[in-house]
View 1 (cartoon, rainbow, N blue to C red):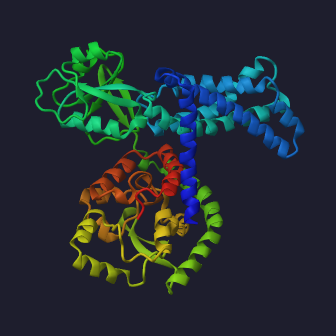
View 2: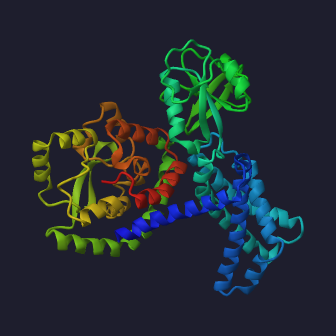
Length: 487
């Protein structure tokens, strides 16, 4: 079964390489790839959507709907609607738009494309009556296919500098260094640091990019780049407004505000920042709960046979209960009984204490991560497989049904782990329910130390929205299949 997970992950990686190889074979310059790759992917997505809709109606025996789908006017109408909606929504601008923002925009596009397709066909008197269903279905199907094709194409475009735009860092000092490193770590943001410029006198710089001298010098050399300004104490808004660049992105120093739910307001000449605290909105919580139940109930029914098989295998390797209950800290700091498939020996705590007493390296790793790379407590074969695949957490779907956990939220930690965090952060975590999956699982997982764990959970809680939860759910399966950082 472990081969199934690795095969799925390697299969997706092979698909990405195949797409990259096909694009490389075209020999197009990077500027052409930048402007044509995503529209071409949408044209292919529209064609595949029409073909799949036709095949679907054919398989269920609806000949009339199948023939209407294959009508000569429908494929170009769906294609035109998809291209127009994505162009208007700004999806072909890959500069400075993160994956979550692009996902949200694509979902809006899925809703807009059918309406636009019907409008286009209605202009030619072809959208009425029985044609409405196949037209709408083909238009909706085109959205997810387009998203998948973007995911396949993006790594190739990033490697060939055809994703986003070159970025010139304006500023110096630690804030500018952190900003440059962050952009380099997250190439999907579409801001490729090429160098930095500053009118201040700077000595030996720790910047991981070239020094282009003054801002005026840099503008003469790279006037087409996007200026990304590190708003330190020495940089004013007047300085930003006068920069000789067409596109300028000002990045303030950490002010402790959410980054995903901030709207700008003009208050009589002053700039206001409106922050929506959705995590405390009762209506949003009810919507989230309804969505969780719609996902968790069928997921648990599907998972029950697999859980039964895993229980049998655990019992064969290690006698005793195959499912155990562990107390974790939940909503409002109350303890919750979390269900898990047992992946450790029954005398796990004794084995851990013995190892930590004699191995200084293991003690250091435990104190930093609260995890061990080589954990003597883990059952041979089955324990490692369950932990790497996260299948040991399937019984927690029952906790989601009970309301102990959310489907998405901060990772539920035991008390000894929570105590290692600051009091302020503990209170922040207690303001929301922990989750079966979360931002930690699609990013660092067990590779995150205590400081990184605090940063990841703080970001999630401060920026929570239904869109962020949807993004995490969609990213969880690839992260689990790849088993990144799992222990």
